Length: 101
Picture 1 (cartoon, rainbow, N blue to C red):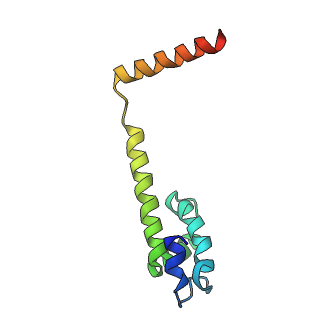
Picture 2 (picture 1 turned 180 degrees about the vertical axis):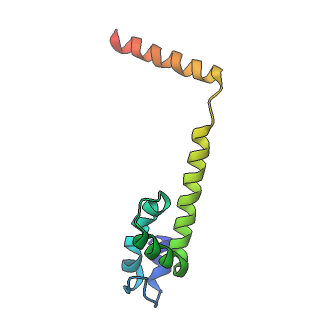
């Protein structure tokens, strides 16, 4: 059982949509990614934010996803050193030559 399921297995309170336990969180876990990417309309954003304010396990999942997204974004701004880039290009060419032979 995952941490999220375990945390909600003993949750007596309803989720933001009135459902209990994991069923109340399943939709929100899927929406977290859309929420992070600003792809939800205002009503859905309000629902997700309200759920995150009340649900510790979902908030932890949101924080994890936000951290991963930030690390990936930061990594995409960095450039590989020119020597590494040249070595990779050379290896790609060597593989292409072997494939065509």
